[in-house]
Image (tube, rainbow, N blue to C red; front, side):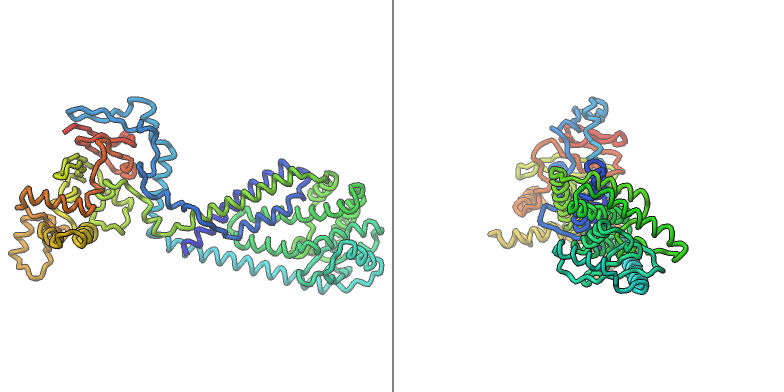
Length: 577
């Protein structure tokens, strides 16, 4: 459900963008020649409703961690902090470049990721509500369109009869043969009670409706009017209009769709006028326009006295009303010419629009509630710090509430028995959980991250007792164990007060020798469990701290921060030891 709603939103956004660009091109390059835009509107409508996709790197790939947690900094200039043996605070005004290192773009990216992560919990419910609202609106639009279709069709059939005018029928047959129109077309004439301009209807069984005042037109004008209407039938414009209505029903919530619909109908008429001019030459324009004005004037003067509501717009009628549009039609007739460069430009625009829509849909196709939940991606050391502190496993999400719950962090570089340099964290004043070899480890972190890694290592190691030895280093302390007496519980709580809060923890054997600790460290390294903690240099990538909005104090011991310029409300201390 979420993916469908997201695709619909992306389609609608691209529809708005593409249509706006099309309107701009139409007003600049095609002023006075708007009819040339008609075939391209059809392609734009197809793009608006067809969710084409192909494989491209999804936008969610940008959520994955890079060297700067997805936050770009140039040449390590930002966040360069001078430090000395004594505690010093970060110089926040050392240079304009440092103050501008955290660009607006980076801030927006982090804000969007935090919003995405915060919305993950409610994304499915919100998508369900939006889908119901969209479906209700779409069904209402379809129902109203069908009712209008049926009403108009019934009205036109009831107030028309098979045409008996021999001149009109003879002219029609000649034009049908001239235009190579092989479809069987029924010709009907409106009764005097229904005054409307000539129009067409039907898709599989096309109908040409003729108004009574067409009988008074001279032969040349009659040919122009019939040629216009037969062009609609030959091009299946009624089907195109039905498709346009379908797109409007799908995008009923998008105001752009209604603007596109009205423009599509107008350009359809202008395009048919081009067909008439193309067939009879530009010299026919004044006479052809005179015929159109005569029909429009006759209909306008008499419709109120004869029938209160004339048939106009609708599903079948092809001529929008209004003097403004009549003027535009005449301007298009006069300005008609073959303009291949402009056509090529518009064709290129539609191709680019189609590719852009497919790219947008393909890039967003992998986004779901899981990817939203994992929008916050931290650098490996900071990520493992948060997981250890909050007792998370590898499948758990790091939420904005979690990073906002951390107000102070101390980072200290320490040399391990393996010779590698690792970072030890103190979070909110507590340093027992967040280190490569914690004195206390919470249950999920130990059983879901540490134990499986040791188990896999033990399966391939020569010494198959490694897993057992490792388990011996950490003793589980469970205050809720039913076998414990109240006296035992009191002793455990006295030794480990955290049990009152956590209920169960793994505690490192306090009597472990240095040799045993070194051996345990080697096991962790061989199992690959030390990698997130290991530092490649004394410069620590601090960009992940950009997500910690409630951070107040950060202390670096033996390290220097890079890739991030801490804001003024964060006190930063850097020392050698």
